[in-house]
Amino acid sequence: YFRELQSFVAQRGAEKYVLFLGDVSGDKLFELYAEAKIFLLPSVEVGGAFEGFGLVLLEANAAGIPVIGTTPSGMDDIITDVQNGFLVRQGDVGGMKNFLEWLLQDPVLLGEMSRQSIARARAFSWDRTVARYVVRYDEILPRS
Image 1 (cartoon, helix red, strand yellow):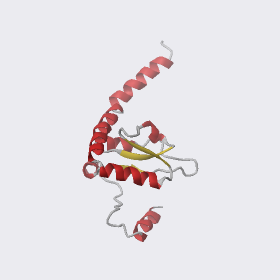
Image 2 (cartoon, helix red, strand yellow):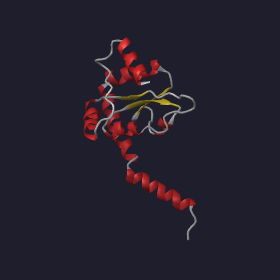
Image 3 (cartoon, one colour):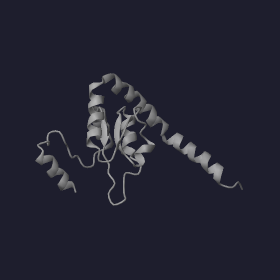
Image 4 (cartoon, one colour):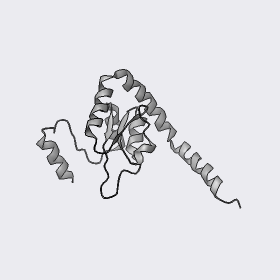
């Protein structure tokens, strides 16, 4: 699959725009997020499997980067349209293009969505997530 992606990029002469980095350190990942304006994750369902949650979307949001993801998928739990990103139907390349252009051409919208992205990521912090689990466990588990 990796070779197919490399070939796809090469056939379109896009090697200077698309980098295949492989595994990167946490520090390098932080640097890459710091350089980005928008994060796009065009996940598609293959054989009944799809992106279940998309932790990378929260990482991007935590760096203040609005995200564009596909639906239906687990991304619906993270992305709130026109707040921290956009959801596009799987395979809707035109929709992704339109949202990318909109964000790149509207610095005010990009800035506002960047602020909302950070707030959205904070809502999924480990402390808040654990607290929600504890409340739920207390609701469903019998007391001894």
